[in-house]
Length: 366
Image 1 (cartoon, rainbow, N blue to C red):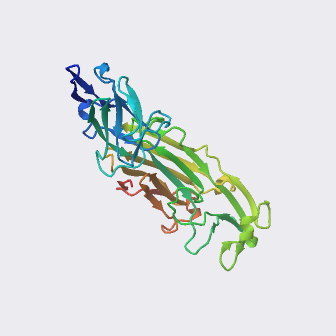
Image 2: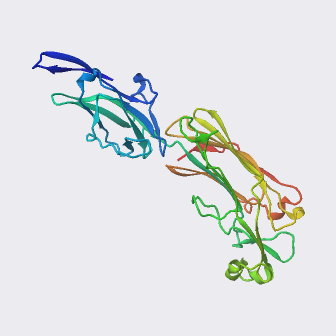
Image 3: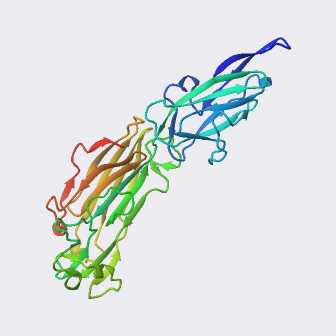
């Protein structure tokens, strides 16, 4: 807020004038003290160009901002772009604009907006200003359960049924956001900040996803190359069930896969991924036990350095990987390789072997 005086020498009057640029719901004294946080994405933050006092002063407002990490819009649907030191607004009415975060700030209070008032006879530069920090307000947490490629290169597994091979995911760990093959997938967008819109219990509305990959069984005698010990291209391309090559394919239900969010406070959220899955092509008594129960906490208390903490357990087979994807990149939270730990598909028969996430699985999110 700024008070200044307009001198009109022709009429010999002096007008004491107030210009005020406000952040939505932030106290005036805090507007330059690291209290204005603008989240990336569609979470636009309103700012208000208050009506000039007295109204008779009239004139126009312009905003000055040079950062490439923000955009300012006239409307909440991101229409009507505001250009720095160019777009004009009537000063005798209040105007609400919307700030969009485009890129995460490198430091606190890095971004600045100031307001200029002017009319035909006078100008007041930098009449008021606000400083703020652009943060990443949403984090994609992805769990993939998969059958990794055997250290020998084998791309299938065998359960104690003679002559049948079950297709794996033929890969190692992958940080790619989309594309890696899986047996089961759980993901959601964690929202640690309570001021971010369109969320329920710390999970972005509509972002929770449970999905299973297609399971395929093969006649080993006609599908596996005896030299490479891998499924042949012909077998993997076979779409007609029955010997030779592919015997059957099916998709496991997601009914027993669950995602729950719990808000811990205004800057922390806890996401639980838990459930169990089966190999749909096997009778129940031969299906390896595939259970998991993970809990990840996303802590955004330090706006520029959010953190994660993972606890939980899972069975010894298959493989597990958990990543957090953010504007800063991908953070590897957890990776478990059953082959490296001496577990095979029949480890779950007849009883599961619980593997616990190591204590201290925590760190910074990129």
